[in-house]
Image 1 (tube, rainbow, N blue to C red):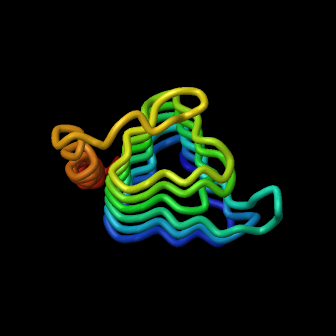
Image 2 (cartoon, rainbow, N blue to C red; image 1 turned 120 degrees about the horizontal axis):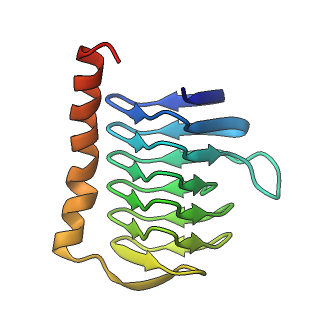
Image 3 (tube, one colour; image 1 turned 135 degrees about the vertical axis):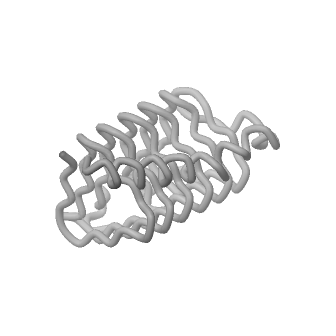
Length: 153
């Protein structure tokens, strides 16, 4: 079971998997269309400064166990498994945050960046091959969710 608490708006064709927690008790959370929140993710609004809203774009995949406190996540983004994005960070469009990475508080990740490491650093521009993950990754989950629904799951 997933938990969705507070002022949360979830777009069309989104998938929120078991164990996910979307907690908008310290600001509103808006999630765009075709976005996937995989198992055991945490999305929590707020900041050290108090109430802060979060906006997550369209066609985003937030991998298993990821923690997101980012103020903004752009469109067509892949946040890898167990990645952490701290308060007030902003992630541009067509980005990949590698599994296990830590994006620091207040960081600004430019469009088409590949971020990896602890602390997370932009290592390069996203390759054409990697861009396929940001563009097609969410669609596979949307189709899978339709199958689950058809099966009564």
